[in-house]
Length: 281
Image (tube, rainbow, N blue to C red; front, top):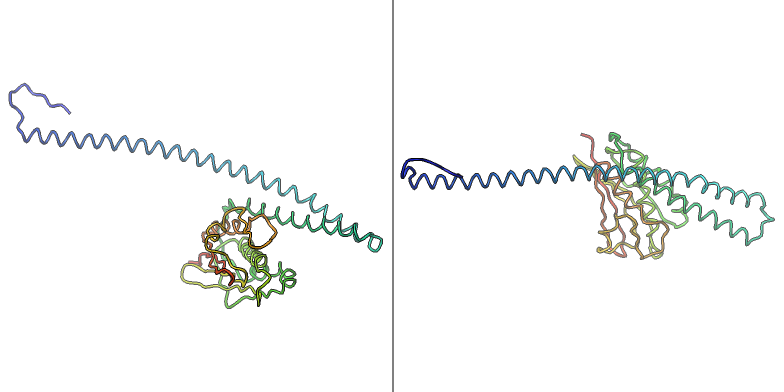
């Protein structure tokens, strides 16, 4: 900052102090402008990277969806053909061959479940559909019905306790969330539960409805709870089928409906998996 004059002693000490203060303020303004310019440039680059990442994710999800969908047809054919062989040969089928065919059918069903999870994972990443008011209780009942045979085989009771209020969401997603939580409760019920049961209830306020799926299973240690909703997380406490996608699908779907999910659990006592959805305004 320069001041010039042809007059001798034209500037007083006050003038010099004012000039000094102006210089400091201008220097600060220049630095701030430089920081703002760099920040704007960084934000522009971040937006570009974010758009590229979203495009890559969409391409990856589309690829995963296509591959998983295309795998279902031959897999279904394998299971049906194995069943047809058993039905057509009946008494003439050697026991050893029948055992092999049972194994083929069981493996094809297991693989079909894994493919379904991959398909749901691809669907749950992007949904631009507007949230609608969902009748949740029928969705809970449908989810329980899916596992009726498994519940009976493991002697587990499944009950709906009290009123189940409506909430904003996607109907099929809500059902799939409950189905994953019920399936998880069955898998980790354990063998020593005195009264194996699953209870589904809801608590509502002016803004959210909290849906709970409580089991009397083995429970989960606190250090394991933090990573439960991550992809491919498996707990080694019991032997269970699956690839560890169920709870990550729950978290992604609930988040996609504007809610949140979590767990309260005590080892050897049981767990309560919960998720919250918005109530209608």
